[in-house]
Image (cartoon, rainbow, N blue to C red; front, side, top):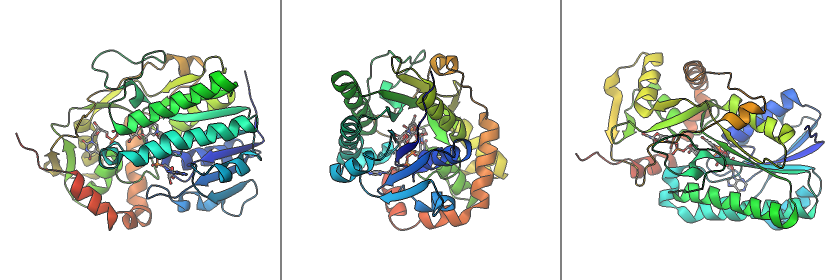
Length: 340
Ligand code: NAD
Ligand code: DAU
């Protein structure tokens, strides 16, 4: 099965994974014309795509995926939509859940509706392994029930249900990827890896929830983007859902120790803080379906982390301006002392 596209709408393309995806497409499939639609929330950054501004085959539209008129006009000119746009940080979803429902659920519905009206050839929703909820034992398979536990993961599960409803009711060719914890260049410094890396560079404490033992499956953003590209082009619509991950479990403690070792900083910078409410202690994915499609991770965690730390060391002009004002208001409100 191979699908090809002349024009794609990449919603949320100015964020972390979206901008890396646009970079991948510009390099490997330069014939595809790309329109990026992004509202430029605190997490979106037009500078992530500065190298493509003014180039043929690329255009940027500043706007909201929840705006049906705007989305309809853009959808009329493309063959498919890839949706990265979302509110994405679990800790923020505990402070402002409604913003997540608006963008992640309603926004996805607006995009699906436009894709249906314009008879698109595919609608790919970039979803997350968090929709399975906490997995204490074993590995999640694509058929497993969705049991999200945070407002973020519930909103992403809602988006999946909306997309599925459009597939069943209107025949929209829907594809869904469920990626694991992604890290690499251009990640806003609120998720674990960039918080630890940028704090360690500055000699600030590295906050770990509770005892730092919660585990995640970390995947480098280039591997994640290659998998999304493969699903978009090669996956059968009859088998529409794909887990994407490395299949390897790493704890917060292991991430922090590796960052400190790369930067040659003392372990005493690790600071255990009060746990995240409703913290999912483990996710683990069965990735056989995506590997059967021909994908495999190429960048192991140690190499990916080394490259990522180097990128943040070399690009202070990208992240330093982000760590000011509202950033520290959120940060100070989010982390509380650990009481044993
Ligand atoms: P991000 O927060 O870096 O980027 C999100 C982008 O969406 C930003 O550019 C933001 O401006 C844009 N956006 C937000 N609301 C919008 C709206 N209403 N209209 C238009 N644009 C809007 O997120 P990310 O980490 O790049 O994640 C991208 C997608 O991948 C999300 O859907 C997320 O759920 C999913 N995902 C992320 C990870 C991860 O570890 N980061 C893992 C699996 C899946
Ligand atoms: O699994 C995919 C998901 O990964 C994505 O869908 C989400 O968009 C993304 O935010 C991410 O969610 P997590 O909650 O897993 O990522 P986060 O980086 O916030 O946390 C990773 C782990 O590290 C988790 O166990 C909580 C812990 N943590 C996180 C932060 C930010 C800390 O111990 N300290 C921290 O400061």
